[in-house]
Image 1 (cartoon, protein in one colour):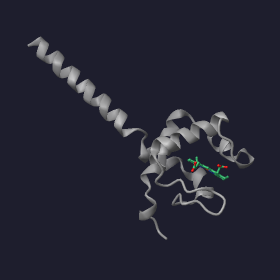
Image 2: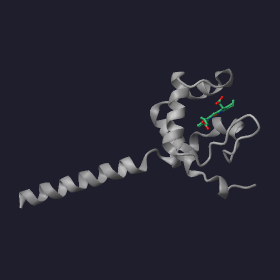
Image 3: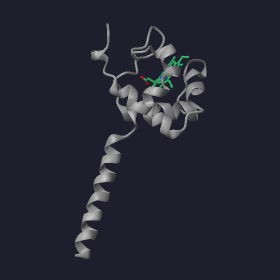
Image 4: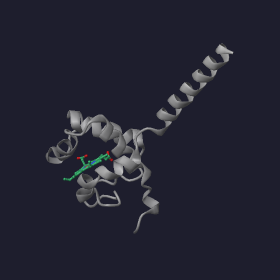
Length: 110
Ligand code: HEC
């Protein structure tokens, strides 16, 4: 009886772990952090003549770029992306990545 309880608990723990990894960042929370991004990348994340589109990119790719900008590993014009990432913690970066990756460019207004 006790053994069965242990096995069940173990299975639930594994499920929770798998769910957490799969979900990645929290896009809903990320949506509340974008006021800094939209002035350059646009509300739709499509970018403009000087800023690249960020909507719909791979979540892992965006997250890595934000980390590299903040650490200085990746440079940007006038260090602008460093400025906008250096004070963001890891959770903000992964939630921002989840949000922008969830925005699909083809669903956006022309
Ligand atoms: C002041 C303007 C400005 C703001 C604000 C800004 N960005 Fe950027 N961003 C840029 C520019 C310019 C680049 C291109 C950098 C380069 O490669 O030289 C860039 C590049 C990026 C890239 C890399 C895209 C790629 O294709 O590799 C990502 C991801 C990104 N920005 C995300 C964000 C996020 C998320 C925010 C909000 C927290 C943000 N940016 C705020 C100007 C801005």
